[in-house]
Image (cartoon, rainbow, N blue to C red; front, side):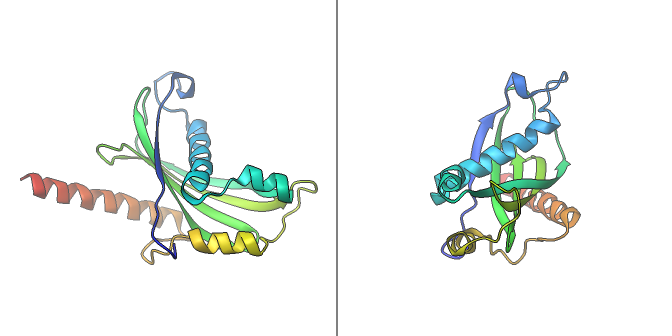
Length: 175
């Protein structure tokens, strides 16, 4: 991100209505929480309300697809942290990433990439980002050169490796 590196994070508690019979966060609810977190992060960290903008412009993003890797179940009443970032942008598409983890241990619950298309809400057809949206996207896109942006499996491996390195550092500081 060009002005300063912001990685928005927020927490929520896994609710009963979000869980499957095993007390694990239902797979479909991961996606809902990821999208809710990103929407909140855009508003709370960047001052952008996609729904208010859609009222003015008649355009908004719709989910075209998701790629999810579930690593460790989030459980009933557990507090989890979600961090989001924008990995890539094209003329009428955005590709955000979200990571859910335990805020205390850092253990990763899931990683998702979301493919969003910018559409005219009346026609349902894709439209290009206008100058204001393009400028906003340029301000918030993650510029970390080390992040894998095109191969999901490699990105998940990067995240897992980064978590393992952090655990090693913490263990060496405790010893």
